[in-house]
Length: 365
Picture 1 (cartoon, rainbow, N blue to C red):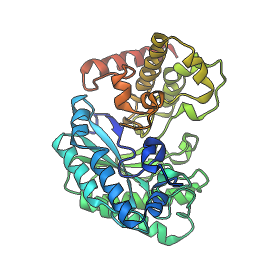
Picture 2: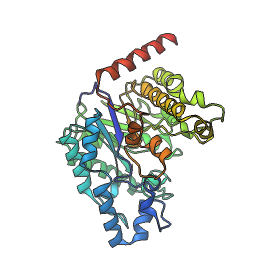
Picture 3: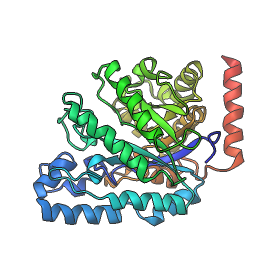
Picture 4: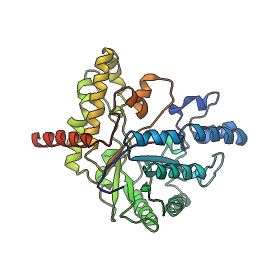
């Protein structure tokens, strides 16, 4: 994939790192709230069986084919260190990472390997694999293991052209000192570059939340370094009467911000059609036609903004929540099938339309 071609892709969330809200049925009958506690509650034999079935069925070759057929050119693949280093009750599974790389190669899809869970866990959230076990920064051994597993994966796939990016860490805790993360980013960059050249593979660092962008953006010396942002308007406060402003958030707020920042070396690692809680009643009060129009406008506005960056990855490709509203907001496939998102992404017309509208907005500001 050319460095001049933006990533247009999806996250394969909840496949190789579990998130309970994305498939609640896996957690039924337990008190577990993350992959670690689920495997612990099930016991080793049952955990092996449950995790094997989930990994075999949640994402399959047909999904990669669907992604390719929609003109998408990339996936972001969240992984946990335990796939390669079985640890405690976690169930290993390096073969699933191999399988994903094979399918990317077969279907000409670029792969952004995203370290969602590192040894010691980089934050207190469940999506690091173990909720509230936030020890990553407290023991040098965790940092050493993190760098070692990053290098190991880079070495494993050094000759696989479909691997075009490494996200060194997903959403590190916001209270981590900038100096600590900067050192990690520099060392992680060096570990990847030992095996993968800059002309082929991007190293992606995280600015989380986006308020920390000035602390990290363009601060790592090197070639082909991108900064990951996760612009989720649904997680910031809104008033109940601001639905119109919310729907227009992409072009009216995010796009000007990206243009001021300089977006050519930013990557939108996650975004969605999630709706802020305060605005849901107003959306539900609309007629179905009005609601669909509002959500299409919301989606296309974000696409407009995200197309100014080095690329974007919707969160997530699929979820199995049993909640139709949640499905369409957070499952790319459901959003496409509902008509909220475009059904193809490689057409020249998509790029031309976005470019034309962006130019008009820039001229007007």
